[in-house]
Amino acid sequence: MRFGIVTFPGSNCDYDAFHAVQDVLGEEAFYLWHRDHDLQNADVVVLPGGFSYGDYLRAGAIARFSPIMREVIAHARRGAPVLAVCNGFQIACEAGLLPGALLRNASLSFVCESVRLRVETSDTRFTSEYEQGQILRVPIAHGEGRYTADAETLDRLEGEGRVVFRYVGTDGEPAPAANPNGSMRDIAGIVNETGNVLGMMPHPERAVDPLLGSRDGLPLFESLLARVSA
Amino acid sequence: MKNFRVAVHIVPRRGILDPQGTAVAHALHTLGFEGVADVKVGRHIVIDVAADNRDSASRSAREMCQRLLANPVTEDFEIATVEQA
Image (cartoon, rainbow over all chains, first blue to last red; front, top):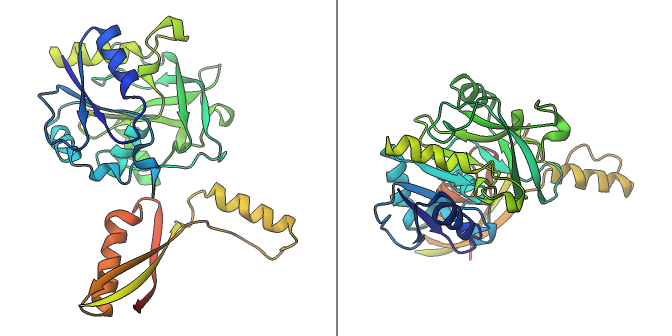
């Protein structure tokens, strides 16, 4: 399977994603330059973390107008998978691929730590290799990760099973102290209506090797492999 | 075409948590400004633009806000001033 990883000016997790795909998952990874107009037949597009365009104006606001985003949006509209992590999630929201917005952390601090996530549904092409209710350890590193949407949108996301990951505490339940950024309804990751675009603030690509403390992110990539090749 | 200078204000929408505004309000209270009820911290953007007239400069700035400068999910904007430069 071919994973195209978009590099924007200021992306800094593109190499982590490349490593996860190529060296750990054992699939083909390549970079897509933000000024290009060619996805090079990528099966999966990864919008990686970082600080595209210095987060000027709002995180993701300018990157969404990068030339390659036209092709990324078309790829998503065709129903092909897009994995949008951290800054990628912010870009996907700005581009209208996902509802809502990611605002400054409630604490006003940049948060870099390992969090617990609960898999809210294994019925997506990104999470089929997890069990529903499974608790993962995955790192976060962001200053603007407070997921925000109106109540109607939040109800709809929950009603349609599109909340994929939630921040939880040691008991596996959401709690204010376990929510690192003040996200509404403890949301850490969501999918779009057609289930082919996943946006999440935590970094699964940084949790693929026990040497770095967790391999809980790897099944996400394996899920894509299982579902997309099938 | 004439040159206009348009200023726009963009602020977090009411009802959406603005921790920055809250922090500033606390600081103002500490300074003794006890009458401060609420603070919203947003952005002030100044745009120099060529247009046929004031209305068209203002319309153009409005579209810029809708498409890029403000996030329609979380922010409100207003055209603060339009001056011929």
